[in-house]
Image (tube, rainbow, N blue to C red; front, side, top):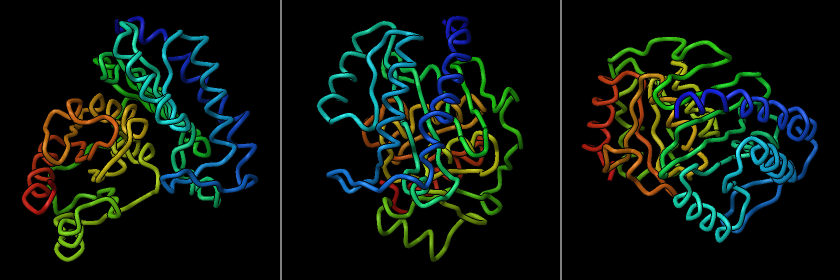
Length: 272
């Protein structure tokens, strides 16, 4: 399996570069904001990118495909079909960080993962404006533009850690404690879950906390981090892949010792 996935990887990377150049970047700052029923933001760029990637991935490997911009029913059908298929399921986020994309902030990404038995075995995330390609294959490692990850080792001291924290989805008691008596050195939020997984895998940040990511937010990124030597769990479960894939809490860190300290502090202070 790893050999087949490594052969597949260049094609997936090429598809992400192509969709960025042909569908995403030409629409940067040129499309109108629209809203889904759940209040989240999207634009015609998201739709065009998803359609492009669906065709490109189909040419690489004929599988069920699940994208963020599909209807709930279509997503559920694709997930069920993927679990039945020995070859797996494509999961894509055509533009993660849509609000950033629409207002001109450079922190957005496009992401694709191949899942088998519900677990990611290949993940690729591309940051178009930075031209940074993050890739991982299960059991084989993770890379950015061909360079082995992490780019920078992460320390083990919680008091010196820089963490990406999404406050709006956290339990109120935990969010208040993080503001009033934070155990970390500093926190950031870039408005793109995919990008933050990439930054964690690279060692640009030391830890991540999120109160509820969707399948397409965490599929590629969680593999990137774990193949870079990091760890991930949810608020209650140490087995990240065993949690509900549709809305998954994230506690992650690059350094395993730091991960234990981060996870334990969060669980003691309201991560439930």
